[in-house]
Length: 569
Ligand code: OOB
Image (cartoon, rainbow, N blue to C red; front, side, top):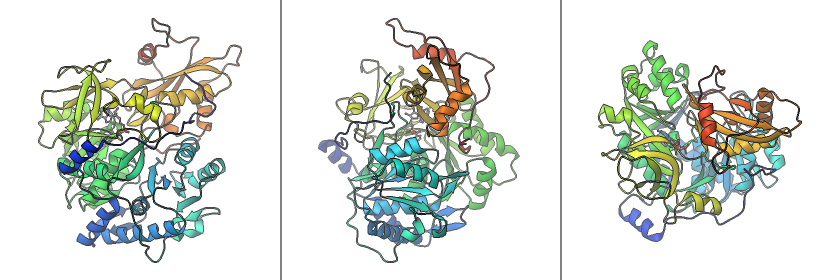
């Protein structure tokens, strides 16, 4: 395990690999890549049905039509360009489920500037890294959200990253202290001519769950992402009469594109923004807005199925519930239809590309026991052993994939790319799967060093690096331990330095939190040990640590789960 002073150091390299020409031509010829851009797509929808409602933001009481969203994106694009934001610039966007999220990203899409999608839970360590690594021109925040003041965060990031030229705050002009600018004051009155991006250009940088010290950035193009949208729409039955409830954080790839808010906008449908995914907030919105589909991570799907039978709210409009991000247990999956009266679609996707869905006409057994099959006939799936040899259908092995919406490499990460992709461009997903004879995938486990905490991904190495920064810590290992609600939570095994003062677990957690990282990454449990178990060749055995973490004990319950506001205390 390497210890660096700053966990997020990087070596500069070329931007990123892309599809070889023969593949690009094939994907275009097959009609997957339609030659559209996000800016152009919104313009077309606004022209086709200006008065249809595109975005409902219940917290703000706003309902923007397609025409209004389009006009707002234009005015904001003009204002951003007046402030020097140009094609190719990176802009870190950290907005919760508010209408401005869409105004901002479509303004950036129109300019050809690239949103870098941060999550509301991220703090100064992550945001500082995104801003410095991408050399971001601007950072967009809410004023406050979930009891947290993002202006304080922005001030810290600004001090750390002097190259960051602008911080824009989605708030009324009066509320925003210098040196930040209110988004409302950035909107220009007129329009400017924008050359805009080409369909094959990068549209944005998405975050990878990651298994390394620094999160990797995922470069997605207009062409490839748009295919994942309309492909998902066909599979999930999304058309212009659909109403999508965006219950998970809007910037995450699942609620953004599977089929998500952007899929809904592609279809000319309506997006309803859910400020929090708990049943007390979501159920009245489903009833009021006649929501037809939504997507949840497994722990939330469990909470919804428990709450639905007793609810006074009319959930009868709900046709499809998508569940993904982490393995949904068969028992929980069986409860969805009886409790919510809708069809379950399991989704096994990744921000790097490949997305699998169970189909609306799959039989019940397939829906509850598999994680679906790929969107595209041209998604290539390989299940291989440790030496990359293909395994027979039905055998369990590593999932490799390549296709029309799966990246060929991370952004500025040449060394990592050499490990994460095969020479002929297959992405090593780190997932352990098996294929059924019908071509459905069953997720059996994971080979990557990551914890999947109810859909929130935590790279063990990232947390280990933070633990190692503690002066009393000699060595640390972080592994997943099973949890009945979240699926997994994090357990840190820590060896203290010889002669160091004894520490309490809570002090270690506080230390990690004070390093300024997202609350969901703080270990749920910390256990002090004298030594780590070793493999035959003397390497630390994470396998043995995982088995130890899986031992039944009377350990206390987990910290915050999905949908809980991250606490910063
Ligand atoms: C989604 O995207 P990411 O990038 O946050 O995480 C991807 C990883 C997968 O490689 C897999 O390890 C895990 O999350 N995962 C699942 C799963 N769905 C995702 N593991 C088991 N069962 C599932 N159904 O999480 C994501 C992106 C688009 C759509 C849905 C989820």
